[in-house]
Image (cartoon, rainbow, N blue to C red; front, side):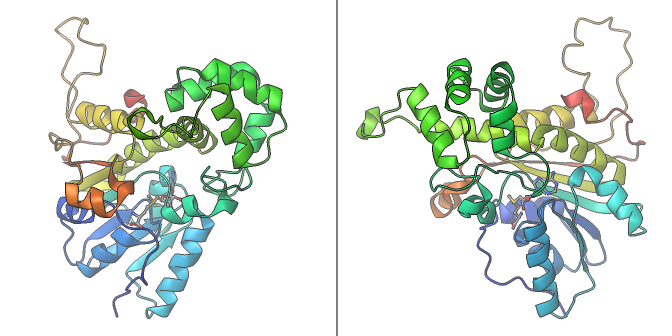
Length: 328
Ligand SMILES: C[S@@+](CC[C@H](N)C(=O)[O-])C[C@H]1O[C@@H](n2cnc3c(N)ncnc32)[C@H](O)[C@@H]1O
């Protein structure tokens, strides 16, 4: 019996494009590295493949188990409650050495964003948490304990926030911060944000950039992405496909650079090196160009607006040992 997901609260982004890029066939083994509400997994199961689904959020895995049980315990759905940087270890424990596809849908799910208790959103007040895995130091721990310079660095690097020092100073002065509402209002006040200005002169809420930055830091998201891509390179069989959907420029830059170098381009910054430098062996064929949601999808699902999909086919070359680090 095929498992079928209940109506999911998360609308899968670029679903048709992901399914087409993965090209899963009956009998294939596919990794859904970011299970979420199982939107991709459901379609992959429908293609007749087996899915090894990873998620670091215990709530996503618990919902997936419930779904599996209510749908006849389809043995083709295997859930792994762990980070995708450990996907090779997870598969090895399941006795699997190679898979035909790995798909990543980076970032947070609607379930995480929409629950004030998870502390990801500033649109509703909740504890300043932001941990996908629900363990380790929270956003409040970071903002209340880090020194001003470290907070400014995080806001600048991961939020591309030009006023990072000013915000960091305001955060330190306002400590202790315990709620998302407090953090958002400290950021807005530091930047003189005027929500009352409407129309063409209306400003985008500046708390967006600071929330993104702290979330990326708390979850080590960019390191996870680099290690996840390298893990996919290790487990994909020749002809297997990597498919990545990302949601902001920092992530897309990592994915683009990673796939470029994996396809044999010299690492960025090496064009001044002697021309005798051997061209690296390609572990992936030339990647697709960036695929973006249609206007219709953006209209239907505003969360798709910033999405970019890239995919590539694995060659038969052995996986690189330093893969992922090179894209940093
Ligand atoms: C955008 S949602 C995925 C939605 C899914 N494609 C769907 O259609 O329902 C991202 C999910 O990936 C998980 N996630 C993010 N980073 C992860 C990581 N490093 N390892 C494992 N899971 C991760 C999040 O907990 C979240 O549930």
